[in-house]
Length: 206
Image 1 (tube, rainbow, N blue to C red):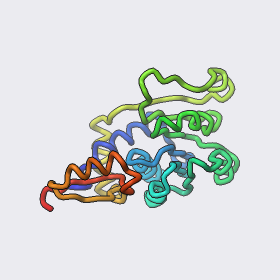
Image 2: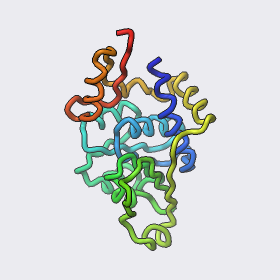
Image 3: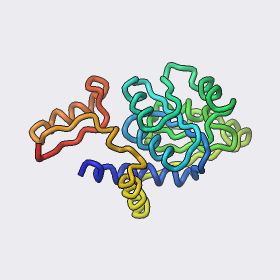
Protein backbone atom coordinates (compact mmCIF):
# COMPACT_ATOMS: atom_id res chain seq x y z
CA UNK A 1 0.00 0.00 0.00
CA UNK A 2 2.69 2.52 1.02
CA UNK A 3 4.98 1.74 -1.91
CA UNK A 4 2.09 1.92 -4.38
CA UNK A 5 1.44 5.53 -3.32
CA UNK A 6 4.78 6.43 -4.90
CA UNK A 7 3.89 5.20 -8.39
CA UNK A 8 2.53 8.53 -9.67
CA UNK A 9 5.28 10.84 -8.38
CA UNK A 10 8.02 8.43 -9.43
CA UNK A 11 6.45 8.13 -12.90
CA UNK A 12 6.61 11.94 -13.21
CA UNK A 13 10.27 11.86 -12.19
CA UNK A 14 11.06 9.13 -14.71
CA UNK A 15 9.39 11.03 -17.53
CA UNK A 16 11.39 14.09 -16.61
CA UNK A 17 14.69 12.25 -16.69
CA UNK A 18 13.69 10.60 -19.96
CA UNK A 19 12.86 13.98 -21.51
CA UNK A 20 16.22 15.26 -20.29
CA UNK A 21 17.86 12.24 -21.95
CA UNK A 22 19.78 11.13 -18.87
CA UNK A 23 22.46 8.64 -19.88
CA UNK A 24 24.47 6.21 -17.72
CA UNK A 25 27.58 7.79 -16.29
CA UNK A 26 26.37 11.38 -16.53
CA UNK A 27 26.72 13.65 -13.52
CA UNK A 28 23.46 14.91 -12.04
CA UNK A 29 22.78 17.83 -9.72
CA UNK A 30 19.35 17.88 -8.04
CA UNK A 31 18.45 21.31 -6.67
CA UNK A 32 15.86 20.95 -3.94
CA UNK A 33 15.60 17.83 -1.78
CA UNK A 34 11.93 17.64 -0.96
CA UNK A 35 9.97 14.56 -2.04
CA UNK A 36 10.44 15.24 -5.78
CA UNK A 37 14.13 15.93 -5.41
CA UNK A 38 14.68 12.80 -3.34
CA UNK A 39 12.90 10.66 -5.93
CA UNK A 40 15.05 12.25 -8.64
CA UNK A 41 18.16 11.29 -6.67
CA UNK A 42 16.95 7.70 -6.29
CA UNK A 43 15.87 7.40 -9.91
CA UNK A 44 19.12 8.85 -11.26
CA UNK A 45 21.06 6.37 -9.16
CA UNK A 46 18.87 3.47 -10.35
CA UNK A 47 19.24 4.52 -14.00
CA UNK A 48 23.02 4.46 -13.86
CA UNK A 49 24.04 8.08 -13.35
CA UNK A 50 27.62 8.79 -12.32
CA UNK A 51 28.04 11.45 -9.66
CA UNK A 52 24.68 12.36 -8.12
CA UNK A 53 24.69 15.57 -6.07
CA UNK A 54 21.81 17.06 -4.10
CA UNK A 55 21.39 20.57 -2.71
CA UNK A 56 19.00 22.06 -0.19
CA UNK A 57 18.93 24.48 2.73
CA UNK A 58 17.55 21.95 5.24
CA UNK A 59 20.10 19.53 6.78
CA UNK A 60 17.44 16.89 7.46
CA UNK A 61 16.57 16.73 3.77
CA UNK A 62 20.22 16.52 2.78
CA UNK A 63 20.66 13.53 5.08
CA UNK A 64 17.71 11.90 3.33
CA UNK A 65 19.28 12.66 -0.04
CA UNK A 66 22.36 10.72 1.03
CA UNK A 67 20.12 7.81 2.09
CA UNK A 68 18.53 7.92 -1.38
CA UNK A 69 21.92 7.54 -3.05
CA UNK A 70 23.44 11.00 -3.41
CA UNK A 71 27.25 10.90 -3.55
CA UNK A 72 27.52 14.58 -2.70
CA UNK A 73 25.26 16.75 -0.56
CA UNK A 74 25.49 20.53 -0.75
CA UNK A 75 24.00 23.12 1.58
CA UNK A 76 22.55 26.16 -0.13
CA UNK A 77 25.03 28.37 1.71
CA UNK A 78 28.00 26.39 0.35
CA UNK A 79 29.96 27.46 -2.72
CA UNK A 80 28.01 24.90 -4.70
CA UNK A 81 29.74 25.42 -8.03
CA UNK A 82 33.18 25.08 -6.42
CA UNK A 83 32.21 21.97 -4.45
CA UNK A 84 30.64 20.41 -7.53
CA UNK A 85 33.77 20.95 -9.60
CA UNK A 86 35.96 19.51 -6.84
CA UNK A 87 33.87 16.34 -6.74
CA UNK A 88 33.38 16.07 -10.50
CA UNK A 89 36.88 16.27 -11.98
CA UNK A 90 36.62 20.01 -12.56
CA UNK A 91 33.31 19.82 -14.39
CA UNK A 92 29.86 21.14 -13.65
CA UNK A 93 26.81 18.86 -13.95
CA UNK A 94 25.77 17.18 -17.19
CA UNK A 95 22.17 17.34 -16.00
CA UNK A 96 20.74 19.86 -13.54
CA UNK A 97 17.26 19.10 -12.19
CA UNK A 98 15.49 22.07 -10.60
CA UNK A 99 12.95 20.96 -8.00
CA UNK A 100 12.50 24.33 -6.30
CA UNK A 101 12.10 27.56 -8.24
CA UNK A 102 14.39 29.43 -5.86
CA UNK A 103 17.28 27.46 -7.32
CA UNK A 104 16.68 28.55 -10.94
CA UNK A 105 19.48 31.17 -11.06
CA UNK A 106 21.97 28.69 -9.63
CA UNK A 107 20.77 25.89 -11.89
CA UNK A 108 21.51 27.89 -15.01
CA UNK A 109 25.09 28.41 -13.79
CA UNK A 110 25.67 24.84 -12.60
CA UNK A 111 25.24 23.04 -15.92
CA UNK A 112 28.28 21.99 -17.96
CA UNK A 113 28.65 23.15 -21.55
CA UNK A 114 26.44 21.02 -23.76
CA UNK A 115 24.47 19.85 -20.74
CA UNK A 116 20.77 19.96 -19.89
CA UNK A 117 18.65 21.78 -17.33
CA UNK A 118 15.34 20.13 -16.43
CA UNK A 119 12.76 22.52 -14.98
CA UNK A 120 10.84 19.98 -12.91
CA UNK A 121 9.29 22.40 -10.45
CA UNK A 122 7.00 25.15 -11.60
CA UNK A 123 7.63 28.86 -11.07
CA UNK A 124 5.41 31.75 -10.01
CA UNK A 125 3.11 33.10 -12.71
CA UNK A 126 4.93 35.71 -14.77
CA UNK A 127 8.41 34.57 -13.73
CA UNK A 128 11.19 35.06 -16.29
CA UNK A 129 14.58 33.41 -16.79
CA UNK A 130 17.37 35.36 -15.04
CA UNK A 131 19.92 34.90 -17.81
CA UNK A 132 21.14 36.30 -21.10
CA UNK A 133 20.25 34.39 -24.27
CA UNK A 134 23.82 34.37 -25.56
CA UNK A 135 25.11 33.06 -22.23
CA UNK A 136 22.48 30.32 -22.19
CA UNK A 137 22.78 29.08 -25.74
CA UNK A 138 25.44 30.43 -28.06
CA UNK A 139 28.28 30.28 -25.56
CA UNK A 140 27.31 27.05 -23.80
CA UNK A 141 24.97 25.12 -26.14
CA UNK A 142 22.90 23.89 -23.20
CA UNK A 143 19.40 22.46 -23.49
CA UNK A 144 16.49 23.70 -21.37
CA UNK A 145 13.55 21.37 -20.99
CA UNK A 146 10.54 20.78 -18.77
CA UNK A 147 8.06 18.06 -18.02
CA UNK A 148 4.69 17.46 -16.45
CA UNK A 149 3.03 14.23 -15.27
CA UNK A 150 3.93 10.71 -16.37
CA UNK A 151 2.75 8.49 -19.22
CA UNK A 152 1.36 4.96 -18.73
CA UNK A 153 4.74 3.52 -19.72
CA UNK A 154 6.38 5.62 -17.00
CA UNK A 155 3.89 4.26 -14.47
CA UNK A 156 4.82 0.72 -15.44
CA UNK A 157 8.52 1.48 -15.11
CA UNK A 158 7.92 3.15 -11.76
CA UNK A 159 6.10 0.10 -10.43
CA UNK A 160 8.92 -2.13 -11.65
CA UNK A 161 11.59 -0.04 -9.93
CA UNK A 162 9.54 0.09 -6.74
CA UNK A 163 8.86 -3.65 -6.79
CA UNK A 164 12.55 -4.39 -7.32
CA UNK A 165 13.45 -1.84 -4.61
CA UNK A 166 15.80 -0.15 -7.08
CA UNK A 167 14.49 3.20 -5.81
CA UNK A 168 14.14 3.06 -1.97
CA UNK A 169 10.97 5.11 -1.86
CA UNK A 170 10.05 4.20 1.72
CA UNK A 171 13.14 6.03 2.97
CA UNK A 172 11.29 9.27 2.25
CA UNK A 173 8.43 8.39 4.63
CA UNK A 174 8.96 10.33 7.84
CA UNK A 175 5.55 9.97 9.51
CA UNK A 176 2.70 7.44 9.58
CA UNK A 177 -0.55 8.67 11.09
CA UNK A 178 -3.97 7.29 11.88
CA UNK A 179 -6.96 8.65 9.99
CA UNK A 180 -8.00 10.73 12.99
CA UNK A 181 -4.65 12.51 12.85
CA UNK A 182 -5.01 13.46 9.19
CA UNK A 183 -5.29 17.20 9.95
CA UNK A 184 -1.98 17.01 11.81
CA UNK A 185 -0.44 15.47 8.71
CA UNK A 186 -1.49 18.47 6.62
CA UNK A 187 0.05 20.75 9.22
CA UNK A 188 3.29 18.77 9.05
CA UNK A 189 3.66 18.95 5.28
CA UNK A 190 2.84 22.67 5.28
CA UNK A 191 5.59 23.39 7.84
CA UNK A 192 8.14 20.65 7.09
CA UNK A 193 11.10 22.24 8.84
CA UNK A 194 9.22 22.29 12.13
CA UNK A 195 8.53 18.55 12.01
CA UNK A 196 11.49 17.23 9.98
CA UNK A 197 8.81 16.09 7.56
CA UNK A 198 8.99 14.85 3.98
CA UNK A 199 6.39 12.21 3.19
CA UNK A 200 3.41 11.66 5.51
CA UNK A 201 1.21 8.60 5.05
CA UNK A 202 -2.24 8.34 6.62
CA UNK A 203 -3.14 4.73 7.36
CA UNK A 204 -6.86 4.13 8.03
CA UNK A 205 -6.12 0.86 9.81
CA UNK A 206 -4.04 2.48 12.55
